[in-house]
Image (cartoon, rainbow, N blue to C red; front, side, top):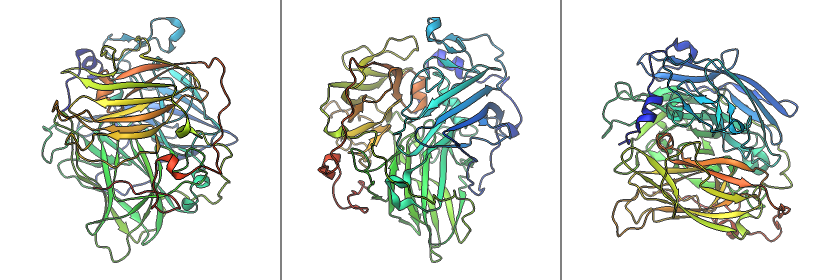
Length: 569
């Protein structure tokens, strides 16, 4: 069951009567609708400029909705950019001003203020999740950036020339009210183009972008059994309790497609499968969290990894190849299995997200790429697995009745405040190995801004009675799940060990946190400060002639010349 929030968070998240509006401000589909692609916007000449309004509305069940819309009313557009581009986003906050005067300072001095100086219930900002971009004001900065009712703010996010091609996303990140904003639907996808250059198998394939979001269950029934903690939607088509009517994916028969799935849920962990006549289908993993699998550390061409199900933490993304059903298939479904999140966790039940109707045209899929560019001469994470760690750290998740914490071992657990000093200080150019434990009885999801990490190990997941999950060891990621501890003092805490790559250009203050947003809003976040290098050494190019798959932590046996099979259960 979800923990109680502290009183401050309750006062900020409580939605007063001024948050009202017409449903057309944030339009939603009816249950059972056909899944359609979000509107697409593409960069031209090295930049993409877009104006977004932040709106609110109330649905027929009384739930508060939030959304980003373009001037022509397009909701949550997918932003397509190329490595090296600038993404220029001007946000106008159209929420009504709060009726109460309650607010809290987000900065202690004028030098750290970015936008408004005080937070209130209307505040918003935008996080460009997964992108390796600067944490400075007017870029991907979330600690002090506030856009309040009636205000306009412009982001100019410079994507590095070596940004991995794949799926990213954007969403609000104001501490204390990020959960209701994301559950209200204010999120959209970012696609960094060029994945065909690292995984030619997807070139020319029709693509589908599938965004799973969660929201409150109408009537707020007590979770348990078949009652989920949160309802789900697929591209804004609701899969709502108790009917649980799935959305509809229309697809041609027996066609190979490239699916890009974003778990844009605030709190819900997914474990998805594609099932034909009761049989889970083999899917081919292309990318995880925006990074083509097997492409790190100097391997130019990624390696496809077969799997039949994949756990997808909140905020994580999976891109994979799927074969649509043949005319002989009677029942085709895209489902999420139930997830045991622990005795203190949420009730993430099994649900059919969509039925797949074969025989339709491909008009609702994205246009395929027509040209395969050569692979880049340098990859962002080249040589990371062979680097020697300059520091090792242990962190842990813990909680009490009202607050959540992520703590460096040896420090005192402290709930997040934007005024907190950095919990970790490091220096540009360093490479660090972090061990992160879960000392609580519910699942947590680790995320750090501004960079990806290399997954070195996933430990004690099954010893503690936690539901087994597929390993992503040897892959780059920006999200990783750490299952619950069973509370037995004789059992070790579940943990992961990840390699942090601070060799990039970004310096300054940014955050790491649990991406179950109830937990982040409740305090499970901390600040890291990256100081400029004393003397930044040149990045070491990978020795591509001698590099082996063993150096990535993968094993032989998958398709594409060097993949591995994800653990299935």
